[in-house]
Amino acid sequence: MPFGWKEALEQGGYSLYITEGEEDAVAVYTAWMREKKQKVAVISLKNGTGSVVKTLQPVLKDITDKWKQVVYLPDQDEAGDEGVKAIRSLFPADYAVKIGKYSEKDANEMVKAGKEKELVSSCYNAGVPLSSAIKEFTLEDFDIVKKAPDFGISFPYAGLTDLLRGIRLGTTVYIAAPEKAGKSTLVNEIATHLMLSHNEPVFAIKPEESEEGTLRRMAGSAVGRVFHDPKVKVNPEDVDKASALLAGKLFVLERNQTPDWKEIRQLMREAYLSRGIKYFFIDPITNLSSGMSSSERDSFLSGMTREVAEDAKSLGYTVFLFCHLKTVKDGLAWSEGRVATADDFAGSRSMVQSCDVAIAMQAWMLTEGENYEYLNRRRVLHVLREREYNAVGKVNLIWNTYTGKLEEQEQDEE
Image (cartoon, rainbow, N blue to C red; front, side):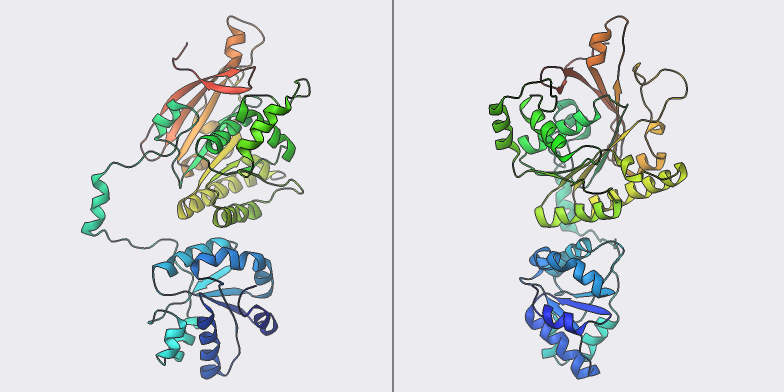
């Protein structure tokens, strides 16, 4: 429990004050008693700014239930700024977290300097920090420009890595595909590539798929085997190989209730802060708008995508958003290899504009015609939008029916 937790619970009140250290907590309590003859609820982190999540996450619900707002009183230094970022991300977006500022390094130094009145005033006048501020570039800042930016880590497909300059942190990638075209397979391919090739944990939010189903498909993707089809015999040794590769890296959303975006958003932020997960997959995003009218759905998805992008940029993680393409009204059907545009993505066009990358999958599901069997195995990823470099292009894939994987084709076979 945080230092002062029992006493804070007994005290209650409108605000809970949180400091970096125990001496600071005592100083805040002392300042209020001296200046206002008033007891306040105040706790401290266990081990400075680096312990924000470890200290507060176990009591997060108790805090939000008992107090109307939190006032965080960090040290006035760079470490304190990092603590502000962490504490704002830990608490739900609609819960008031205010930040105090003062002239000395911390609350304890304020009391030592006889500035109790200013310290109490800083508690009263604490404000919600702006999501952005003014950045002044100094001469030293230009040194970073002398070296070209680094590539992000690789996709499972070299063509996509080259086109998009890799998977870059702080971005959102929006991927759409026709129904039954292999969208979920693409999820598994990218996710397992991150786990195997880059040793990165991933958080897969797949509300339409059971937890066991996700495990079977991810494990199969990792070793190039099919574990989810009852017609295919499972080799236990292959499963052991998959478990050695994925254990401790794969996290999924428990499917014990209808998913709520507000809760999922908070889970993602906490997963990043407490577990260091930097890569998230939501498949499909339209499941989160179940039961809404068409207009409500468009409004929700537009707002949700904007919030995902804001969190990704501010915290520095990457989110892959998957959806189906809209129903075709005229012309070629999706099953006939129709090429999508940004207007075909589920939700509104503003969703595509909110994301850093928009990719559409082209597929064929034919029953006859020349080369129909080959075409049915073929998939093409069309990069339609890319914010940073305006990169557009396509990557050709082929479905390997034995391994259940989507493999890259080196040449475009028309």
